[in-house]
Amino acid sequence: MSRPIQARLDQGALESNLRVARRAAPSARIMAVVKAEGYGHGLLRAAEALSEADGFALLDIQDAVRLRETGFRQTLLLLEGFFDAQELAVIAQYDLACVIHSAWQIALLDAYPGRATLDVWLKVNTGMNRLGFAPQQAAQALEQLRRHRAVRSVTLMTHFANADEARGIAGPLALFNDFAAPYRLARSLANSAALLRYPETQGDWVRPGLMLYGASPFAEVGALQLGLRPAMTLRSRIIAVQELREGDEIGYSALFRAEHAMRVGIVACGYADGYPRCAPNGTPLLVDGQTTQILGRVSMDMLYADLSGLPQADIGSTVTLWGEGMPVEEVARAAGTASYELMCALTARVPVVV
Ligand SMILES: *Cc1c(COP(=O)(O)O)cnc(C)c1O
Image: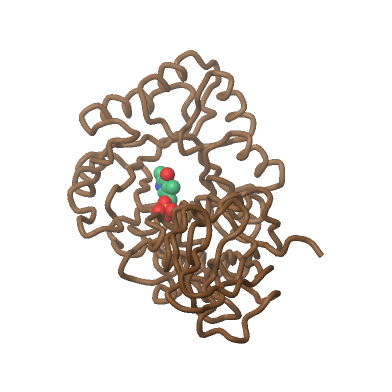
């Protein structure tokens, strides 16, 4: 028998979550965001399950080439565009679309000899202040791109900083719409949160990521309420049981001390598997399908599960760290992080089964 941890990927859930996106944005094309190995689910496995999408967005040019060579014919968008002149030839060869977010990229385009080969997405900075041209500079960049001999098409895009929060998108949306109004160009604005909450942001292309993997982008609305199914379930087993007496402590730094006799299960899952080390006492998990909590410090390869009230739990009991029955958002909240980070954190030593 091998170490019992595994991540089960439910490709049916990905397909179903894509349909949720489709229903929420019926008139937009869907650019499924598969960056970071499909948010930790595996690039090719995620893309296969999402093959009904109209496009895929990602970061690495090698990954885009991998998708193209595997046979994906959809639009493949590089979210940070290109980084050097050599990449432009690859972009043309594999028919990739690329974000243009800075003037230095336009300078690289100027030196590129190709003609009408590139589909570019001009990124407008509407307040996120990460990538993109401020609206005042974007008009000039757009003029350069529209008459650029290397450019075949221009799509206008922006990205919201607060679509999932109370702040919302009103200000940035108005900025973007003011900028885009004079042009008859395709538009793309919405991430998962904007797609689900603000139909007025849908434009021509929506760019959902998180929701496709079955997590809610909102603190106050769960994934199930949104009709989303978790695509990944991280499971392991109890490999040892300790009977604690009153006053016994557990783990590094003795972060938990038993106030009375109790049992704890040692779970074969630790931070080297991608479970957050910062998850404190009380972070929820399932043992044999019942909700309980972790105790003590998460170590590299193991963590402690509270078996109080679970007399049937024993060596071999199944533990669900997150996924089916244990929303990844709840684990993330308890650990002070985001479900995005937990999904991406899964390490290579965890076998993924479909
Ligand atoms: C990651 C990303 C998305 C997807 O965001 P989610 O919140 O996961 O839906 C969309 N657009 C851009 C530019 C991104 O970087």
